[in-house]
Each structure stands twice: as structure tokens, then as C-alpha cells.
Image 1 (spheres, one colour):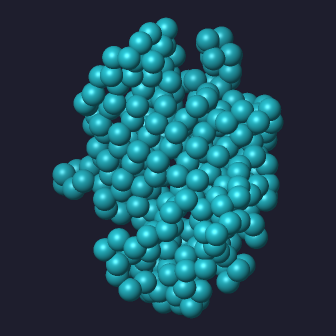
Image 2 (cartoon, one colour):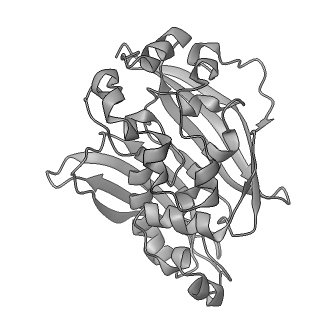
Length: 114
Length: 192
């Protein structure tokens, strides 16, 4: 709803019972919702520190089903030393459910200011 | 769910205006096997998006993000940003609004579409008061493991033509208009 994406796979339980784009008979969460959660893991510290989130590359590996808890974790995987104002890090973020199933992956670049 | 069912949750002016029915006009959506790559001129979206505080706050709320820079106007005003900062994925709302129903890019509304993941390049955070227009063009079309992928480059500019964000919007789509027609009838229109 926040995204204006009303694809019926997300909000029409009757349609999805037979249409099954993901080969499952119930609605699934928006991929952009998961991407938002993963990005928030980074903006929580980047925004207050005036850092620029410059690039986000996400891949969705499994549809998110109702009732699942999404757990996001991240690690700084790269540090790029270029010059003042252009140095940046890459944060690898993954989203999993409680069972440990991988739902999505993101690489998020964060630029450090002068 | 009907529009009336969804409307119970609407909080913003744009939500009340936006067409939630992705089935009507679906027969006229751009189709994977008909995309014209001979003309790569950028085309404007149908609509522009005037960013209001309620838009930014509702997106943050929808993503369960309680960052006060995205939710608290008074707090954000006193911050170095001088006002609310939109969540980076807020570009999704902008794209769906600006693409509209009948214009180029309307394939993003296709019933049966699946999201494999996205690439965003963010140049400046979106702010309240900006009016955003989106220009887009086909970028790639491919088949991978039996699935049809379509990718458009969508560039979001503000009223001063400052490039705010670039999205390589990608979806896995039904291949033909007949496949879309199956989805409109509630039948799976994919072969994978």
C-alpha cells in the first residue's frame, strides 16, 4: 500500500489461489518491503551520521509468506579508500525467516562525507 | 481485495486517488515480447509526484521504520537535513504513481509479474516540497532459466531537473498478451 503496488499477488487471496505466479496458493509480501527492511538496517546509522546511501543492489531469493518473521543482518564487507568525501563502504545485508531460509540479499554502498 | 477494503487503511491524499485496480486496462499494458528496443528515447511518465510530508511518513510507517528523520517533522526540521528525509526505497511509490495506467512503463502493473530484485542509484535523498517526474526507457530484455525478464532505466528528476535517483526496474513477466490474459482470468500464465 505504501508503495502503490497493488499487484494482486500481494492483496487478492481469491485470485492467487488459482493464478499462483509463485506456484503457491496464497498472497506474498512485496519484494520492496523486504528491500526496505534491509535498507533500514543501514539508514538507522547512516542517516543520523549524515552519510549518503548511494547504491542498493537487491536480489529476492524466496517469496515472503504471511506469518513469517523477517530478520535482517548486515556486515561491512568492503572498505574503499579513495579520497576525502568519496570513501565508502559496502554493507552486505541478508534477510532470513526464523527457520533460516534466505529471503533476500542486498549490497548497500554508503559514502562517508568530508 | 476491493478498493473499498483497501481504502480503510489509506492515510494520504494520493492513496485516495490512486487506481488500485491492476486488472482494468491490463490488456493494454506493455508486453514483454512487444517491447520496442529500436527506439531508446526517454519517455516521461504520465504523472508527476509532489512530495508531501504525509507521503514520506506513510512510506516509513509501511516499512516499519521509526527513524525520526523519516517520521517526526519537528525533529527532522532541527536536524542538519532541515526536514524529513524519505526512505531510499520511497522511489517505488514515486515510480508507480508517475508511470500511471496508460503510459510507457505500465508493465510494472501486470498481474502475474514477479520481482527478482532491484538496483537503485541514489544521488540525493527526496525531500518534502519537491515535484518529481520520471523519465524512462527500455534497458534490457532477457530469458534466464525459462523466465522472461524486462528491465527499464527509470530516472527520477525534481522540478529543477536534478537527477535524484536512478532505478533499473526489473520484473519477471508473462511473455505474451495471451499469457497476461490467462492471469486476468485467474489462470497461471507462466511456463516456468
